[in-house]
Length: 414
Image (cartoon, rainbow, N blue to C red):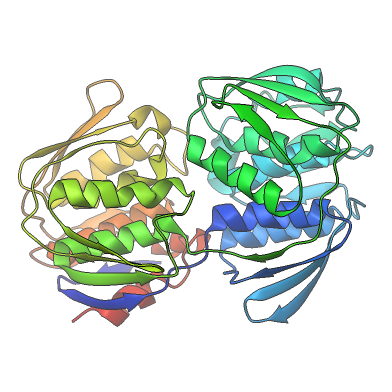
């Protein structure tokens, strides 16, 4: 689907979808609980639907309470031998260790760009934990057969924290205690979210500065009433829209959140935007913007939003952490460089782990989403300050995280 976004101003208030990172963690914890839990304020984007299918396959009994609430009776009793994770990298790395709790073989299958994303970081540690793994040279599909045993293992955390999240949520149910030694952990705020979710379900996970995690075995997940907070990844692109083209208030978000992407507010302030923080909302308003420096190593999902912000700022902005972008829905560093070039913005990725963006005038063009929801949203917000309309190819990919994005953007356009 092509989507054309005209230049214009924005002003209004929006409520973004729930945090899909928290939603998937809460769905997993609800599965691992033998009691009934209730999850509220859910938004059923593609990734959340994939996680929901996974827990149902693994034995959860799910009932719709109302439009955005689910009642989930947990318990690991696989009703199928294949987990379909869609295009969700988090669902893959989260539910593979959970499936490894089961003594029956389970195959993990994905589709689309996920089939090109490496998963070999999981196979070695799982085998050390007593899991039989039939891999596919480090790519999906592959098969696991447990039960996972616990013990002492080492995990490389330099590529992604998602597999560590899967281990942290599954290992409390292992027979043995576990010490998890993590090398070069990145995206540590996401690990905070995992520990927080587990604690809400009565499970304790301890760590020493994210280098060692101590997980007692034979724990029990307790039922929870979990209200999912708003998604800061979605909020970030809306706040950038306000900063470059008017004023936007985002509801159901808090700066006290453990989500990594609250860091967008730091970037907005450094760029010169007006940011107003209230108890359950944040507002960003346009002011003259200047180049900024920002380290996105621990919040790589912010890169497309930061690119839109930098393109509107006077001077050359420097964003660190491009090494985290290669294995997303696309190589985001390359996608940002190539698509922003089409609209007249110079993006330099020649230095290791650094992206430099020279702000300037944006021209109309036809651009590609690269099948990446965050790229589609980034180009749409950039279009607000172009000299003519920008057409985005493959814009339907926003359904992965924010199905109503284009409708919401139109709602606040003035």
